[in-house]
Amino acid sequence: MISFLYAILVFLVLRFSVTLFNFLSNPKLGLSLRHYTDLISICIDAKDFTGENPLDDLLTQDYQQIEILVKLTGDPMLDYHWNTAYGHHRSVHLLGPGVDSRKEASGNYLLFLKPSVVLKNGSLQSMMHRMKTFRLTLLSVIPAQVSTGFPDIFFQPLYNFVLLGLVPLRLIRLSGSPLFSAGSSECMLFDKKVYLKEHWLDGLFPADIGGIEMIKLVKEHRLKTETLLGGRLVKSYAHGSAEVIFKRTGNRVYGLLGNNIFALLCYLVLVVAGPVAMFFSLNLNLLILPAGLIFLSRIMQSFLSGQSPVKNLILHPLQMLVLGVSLIFTAAGRFIRSQQK
Image (cartoon, rainbow, N blue to C red; front, side):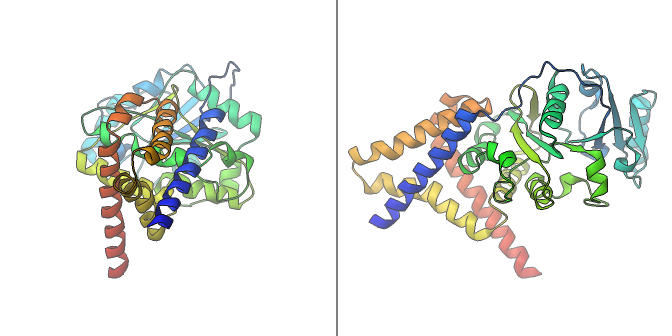
């Protein structure tokens, strides 16, 4: 039992160290004052959109050198709505379901966006600045999650809680090792020339395999990539029922752990079961160190993610319970599917 408690304490120290590194290095997309005129082709899939006017935020961007390529669904009613709303707009190109929007793109850069992502003014200039300055092939931006309902206060902070305690984000660009890989498929900007030259994922959107796998793929080709937090410039509004968000949370964390059930179970024991065991096994004086490490880690992660540190501290036990249950369901689902194959 003592060895187990020591292992938990060592893990808490390591997680705190990674969080501190991220906090001090501040891996956020910063606002750039430089102006660029490169054409950016924004690729989106119409079937993912749920709002009435999904492109209005993009069309009011301060970065004017954009074209929006929308892959239609093939549903006559939905496609009629898209044609009515945006068919006349010179910056919007509506493509048939079988057309590969990437090959129709005229821009030098390809930006893949999820429907829940909102780009604030200055975001595209800032993303271009990172691409140009560091000669990146791929820039992945993890949007700041905006709470849209009661379930979000439990689900919303969990991904960044795991991410910022596991991966030193600045090392993704500085190190060529695929071990330092993390990213989001919600917002990915590619150098189009390199992307098409490598014939990556023919027939698939990069979002179909996930941001982490895409980062690893770029690194395996010895090309430069970077992952940043969206901060105030790139935000995401969660949508869907509590059940959908619950499953999505488990799957995202599972991907962050390398899609490995053993790693998932180990993380579950260290993060959820370990602190509970410490609470019941140690006296108050010995709990000061692990409690302090958790307290400081949550504060730093909250500020980096643009979340309320007070809410996260108060709800920490319930959030860890939600995380534990979602990981158990994810592990069970993956195991059952693997046995059925």
